[in-house]
Image 1 (cartoon, rainbow, N blue to C red):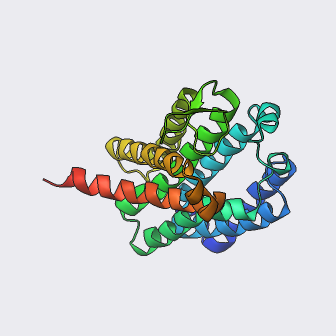
Image 2: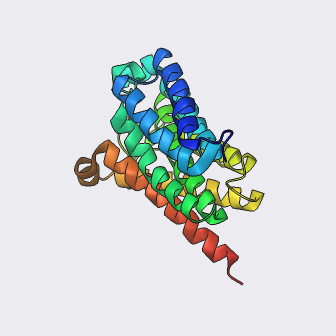
Length: 244
């Protein structure tokens, strides 16, 4: 899980180097740098380099999608604030569920199911980000999944063909990374991770289309709920499939 006999120091050093690179590339602000390093180091410490790799795959993908068609999204009012620089609250909302699962993973002795559920939380975050960012930038025809009423791309809870495809691909990519590093122990389990993440992200769109839910939870609250549901779905589906 580690490359040195000092896992906490290793976790902090690797995460700090990555965080500084992200800061100077303009993808996080100062609070995002501090929050990201703190959360990332803990995930690295509890889950090893494998867990951190999954986190990095989500972050790189999400940052790239945030920049995709940024001017167009800004005109629609759907662009990430601060020119796409994300802060500590974004890191917390997308990573806190994964962090808690990484603790379970460590103290369970690296249980395969805990590893898969960890990957599912970040695959869900990636699917949600991809659906929102790619859908706002590329989606020509968006609609609300609750009423099927056509709305402007970027409307909270809106879905589109382009955004849905991007969501599925993002979930598959993070699930693939999880499989390659060994957290999703088998290809079949990686497929379950991908499916769970995609379904959870779509559920988040349905909830987001309900104004009262969106207003009550806010964007960060929705992200926490979304990643939790993706992890829970992975656990449920895995249990169902493994039953004789």
